[in-house]
Length: 255
Length: 222
Image (cartoon, chains in turn orange, green):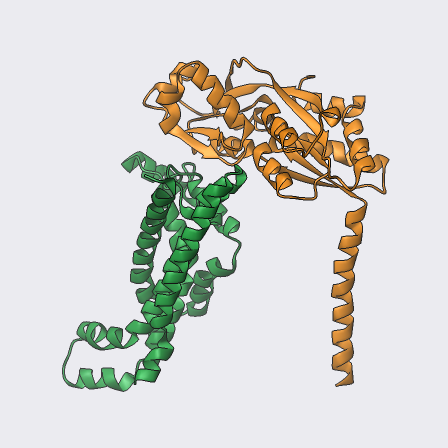
């Protein structure tokens, strides 16, 4: 009987200890919500950051910028927001989640049309997407995914949207579009040049899509961040030459 | 039409087909596991129960790999019928059916095991064929237990999200659960509210119905 109850005591102590330790860790932790297209580059930059500041703990949260914005708007404890478009950041500013002074563009990207590397379809221009052979086109959901908004904008400008809308497979973020093209589940898709570069063996870039607005990524400290100094230090780190070099290596351009 | 109704209709269609498939296979597999002894019986039971405990994303990934255009089956369907499960409502049916299957075959197995063998024996003595015994004696006796499971499976299929998101993506006219997810992602709280209330109402109705048919009630009546 005694042994049994002491075992329970050990177990309970361990569980409480684990729960407590994770909540203590949160205090010095900086949470970064970043656009899905930044996944690889930010993981690498964060490794360097933590090597330089061993006491710092960075949690990365990737997703469609629109979805990340909603999480922040609903009170998610986020310290830094890096969006793939100005629209999401404008909205964050409008809702008072970030202030203009804290906001800076840090990279630029290019919208590209891609197809599976073994695709036999002849897709050279945007108009070629109208051919019957192209049945499905992966497009980020314009309601929450910046790459989808850029795509919709480009196709609306060229008056192709009404003809192509029915072929659209809406995805949750740019990486899902990339994955569907790489698996050959869709005939083509719209992603960023940096995403296409990750899967060179599976997808080919058909063309860079002309846009009348730049694809620039803003980053900002969240106003309600309980960890403002740490957030500022992380953002400053993004602008250091070593971090910019990583971003360039992944195909991002200077804003 | 209001998008909420479109989503509800698609969800009902997907869950309806998934339930029909589960009814047929659930009775077959339930009967097989209850009455027959064969090697690998426990393994079969385990494998078919797996979708209930496995993360839906794992299941979705399996389906994407097994049914996708690059798979043998996916390529064959595409070449011969020009058909693909990925991004279609039929793909959503497969995902929902597999996730909900344990809820049908488990109670079906239990219901068949509970059928009094003497009644079947009596029918056999009267010279009725085995097929007729199954449909006129065994199945009617096990029916209520099976039906309760089927209704639960219908509710589960209605709520399927994870695996569906991976194989069907945001198919034109999304299912209720995916429409809720997308509305929240896009910050359309008013749409989300409508969808959530609608989903809750439908699930409560199905569960109430399932409760009325639960095996416990039969015992009370007998």
